[in-house]
Structure formats: structure tokens, C-alpha cells
Length: 255
Image 1: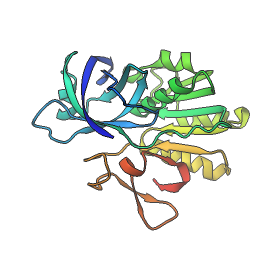
Image 2 (image 1 turned 180 degrees about the horizontal axis):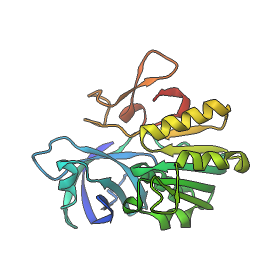
Image 3 (image 1 turned 30 degrees about the horizontal axis):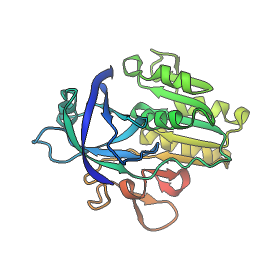
């Protein structure tokens, strides 16, 4: 992990209040899907950096996607090509993809689709990936072409039915789980989505390995401030999402 000045290559809207920012990869930095960066906003009024999952990367560039939720992220959308932003990177652990994990399911909702997109792009040539992606409505839909191109199968749902099928992304995934016999599942999205997924696994006694990437507010990104703690399911202790995660086995965290 290093503090680095990142050069902005592009910054554009991709959906309603959702933007994608691309950076040049700094020298001697190696990125993995599932990791994140802690990025300054470029506005001195906002001293704390914001955490963003890496959404895609090559040897030369990488991108994040962010949703406008407050004045800090509002500042980001005005950043111009050629600007430099301070960041800590790479942070966190990464998606564990074992050699025997060949048939993969990814289940994503909202901005939780972006770390999963990086996973697809890293392993699309060596794994068979099935994507189950949920959005609130058509105005939030983005990256559909990427999921379709990089997945053997891609299912999309929206809460209100304004795009693709109306439904719940967890239900869409569960309807396929018996038929497809996945080797592993990776998921990221709102806590309510992950809770529903965990309940389905418990109710049906699924023993498929399942890893989740948690979205939490973070202050420092390195485990010092304890803003992003979550409970260990089995032990009386806390995980620091930024330091111990953000990726955990589904049953080891108390959601």
C-alpha cells in the first residue's frame, strides 16, 4: 500500500448519478480484483478520502465507479482529465479464485456490481462465469454490455421492472443454483441483499463456497480508525472491513 498521486484519464457519467473515473496505473503497482482505493475528492473542504472498489484494470489503466451521495462525491464528478488526485492503493484483500473454482456465479446489486466486474475481467478467459445483476430501476442500469460479453450467462433484474425482468437478484440466482451446480459464489451489494443471500444458504443447506465483498463507510482505509468494524459470526471479536476484508466468507460475518 502506498500514497500516490493518480493521473485522471477520464471521468464520465454512466447512469443516473453514477460516474466512472479512469486512472493511469502507477509504476510498480499490482492490482487484483476485489481490492479498493481510498481516494481524495480534490476538494480541501473534504479531508477524508473515500473508498472505491476497483472496477476494471489493465497493465496501463484502472477505473472506479462511484455514485453521487453527498458533497464529497459531488466534487469528484467535476474532476477533469489530466488532473491528479491523492490516493492510498491498493487496499484490502482480493477475491480468492482457486484452481478448482471453474464454474463461478457472481451476484451483485447496485454499486456492488463494480468489484464483481473486475473479477469478470480478470478471469473471463479461464473460468465459466454466470452473472446475476440487480438494479433499482432503468435509470441506474450500467455496464450491461460488459457483463454480457464477459459472462457465459448474464441475468438482469430491476426492482420495478423498468429494465429486463422485475424481481430480486437473490431470487434470480437461487432459481438457477440447483441446475447450474456452481463451484463458488462471489457477491457484493446492499446489506439487505447479502442478508437475504445468507438466509437462502442456511435454509437450503447449500455448502457451496461463497465470498462477499462488504461496502462500509471508512475513515482511514488501513484499520486504524475502527469506523468500518463488523462482527465475526463465530468469535467474540470484530473484523475491520478495510484491513481484514473487504472480502469475507459468507458465514464468517454477522450481517
